[in-house]
Length: 125
Length: 175
Image 1 (cartoon, one colour):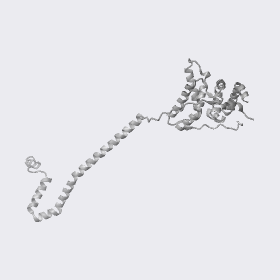
Image 2 (image 1 turned 90 degrees about the vertical axis):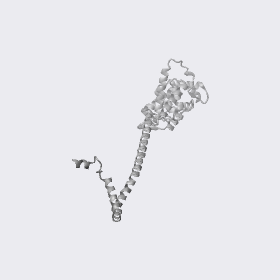
Image 3 (image 1 turned 180 degrees about the horizontal axis):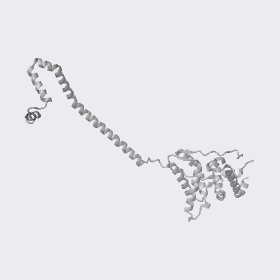
C-alpha cells in the first residue's frame, strides 16, 4: 500500500516549470586589487634595487681590479728588484745602484730638504 | 515506507565550484523560478531573483554552504517576499500567468494547480516543490531544511491531501 497519494503525485509530475533563460555569466575579468598592485610595485622596486646594487658592486670591483693590478706588479717588481736585480745592480753598476737607492728613499721617506720639513724644524729647535 | 528507521544525518559542508553552481542552475533554476512565482512575482521578476542569486554565488571563488539547494530555496523565498513587499502598490496581474506547462497545453489546469499551491502553507508548498519538481527524497528534504523527517513527511502528506481536494475533479477525470 502506498504511503502517499500516488495519483496526486503522478498528476503533479505531469506539470513542468516554465523554461528560463540561460544564466548569462559575464566572462571573468581579472580584477587587480590595490594590494596586488602594491606587492607588484614592491617586487619591482626590490628587483631594481638589487640590480642597481649588483651593477654598482661589479663596477667598483672592476675599478679596484684595474687599480690593484699595476700595484701588484710594481710590488712584485720592487720585490724582484730587492732580491735579485738589486744584487746584480749593486755588483755591476754601483753608481746606478746608489741612484736607485736615493730615488727609493725619496719616495718612501719624508722630504728632508724642504724649508718646512719636520726635520729642519726640529733641528732648529 | 518506514520513516522511524531513518536517522537524521549530520549536515555536511559543501564547497561549490562554478561548474557546480551552473549545474544547480540548469537542474533547479526553472523550479526555483516557479517557486518564486508562487510568492506572487511575475515571470521576469522571478527570473531576475533567481539569476541574481546564482550570479552572486558565481561571483565568489568558493562558497561553503551546508546545503546549496536549501540555501537557494530560502534565498529565493526571502528575495521574492522582499520584492513582493516593495511592489505592493502595483496591480496584481499574476493570477492569469502560468508558472507551469502541462503537456495538454491546458491553461485552466495550470492555473488551477497554481492557485492550489498558493493556498498551501509555506512549509508545505516548499516541501512539494522540493519533492516533486526538484526531485529530492523526503530524507534529503529533511536534511537540507534541518527539519525532522516525520515533520517533512507530514507536511508532504497534508499538502498532497489538500491538493487532491482542490484538484479532485480533475484527478477523477484523469483516473
